[in-house]
Image (tube, rainbow, N blue to C red):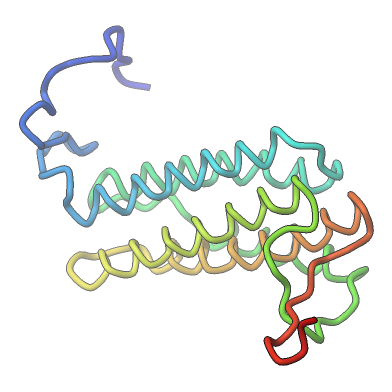
Length: 184
């Protein structure tokens, strides 16, 4: 697996640069660093979701997703590497289909919340959308595996649907948006 860090601080980034997986150095605000850094943040928020009480099927899927996100971050960290196959997207689509089977159709917008666990999932969804925007921005300047963008897009859909399922499992309610002129 290559070399492991035995010392966490190296001082090599003290002047605002960081190393990519291919050994090259770039500024810490480089689009590539921003993209894989946001994917890392997303993985952390998925971990926050996993720290809450969840239906076992969603817990199992999110455990898999964390590994896939680590692959995705690795792909972004090493220019020219492809680690995200279409099968990851197919898996998320199958998960979405399974979760959607028992949900009523959406007739209103849903506000982030409903329960602690659902709110965490909504937070992960919004971080996922930001990660997707960062990867799209990178793709304007550099080659990016198209499956990576599709994966993040599908994952944000999954997190939305999972939040709906979690809210119902926690207390049977989703928080529906009420238009300003209809709020009391």
